[in-house]
Amino acid sequence: MTADVITLNGVTKTYPTPAGDFLALDKTDLAVVPGEFVAVTGRSGSGKSTLLNLLAGIDRPTSGQIQVAGTDVHLLPESRLSSWRGRTIGMVFQFFQLLPTLTVAENVMLPMDFCATYPPRLRRPRAMELLERVGIAEQADKLPATLSGGQQQRAAIARALSNDPPVLLADEPTGNLDSATAEVIWELFAAQAASGTAVVAVTHERDLGRWAHRRIDLADGRIATGATR
Image 1 (cartoon, rainbow, N blue to C red):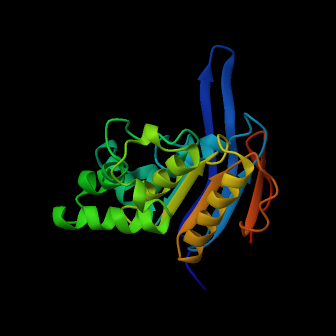
Image 2 (image 1 turned 180 degrees about the vertical axis):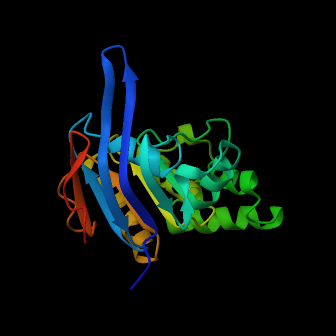
């Protein structure tokens, strides 16, 4: 059997508020294997973004264990989190978060520069390969603001893949796109999963059966459906 690339065991996350502790995630268990595309759905405040932030090491669990690509994320010291995240996690966001003063190719090269995963002479060719894969190689030397929303999201996906991470996380990646463009983005995620990457995408769209292998529904910080394979 294929070893899990993501494992959550009894993960709880609470946030302090003036009215008392807010329980964002409650005793959550989850396992994802390489090449699996998991869609995470649920109402606002159900714990979806908290789950992604914990997987990426952006936030820490209050209790429980999180392992991603063989690393105990909950035990990583702060000094190692950024470099670990840069090599292990690809992040895609709703509003793209491309640096406006860098060209599209330079945005894709940025994680390679940060983590030194490729020699300098290979970074531009690697960026062009990824932009070709997502279908916007001709936009490589343009600034993000000159691209359509769908093109910017493709560039953001290429950037997320630049260090060939084993895990791709996406937070409402189609929430700012029209339905036709959204389909193209979901197809790109499905293709990446088919290549062996574990994909976990938070979305309000519930009809992803054509692309996702499994849907997890979060409600009040707990997984309502789809936790186990």
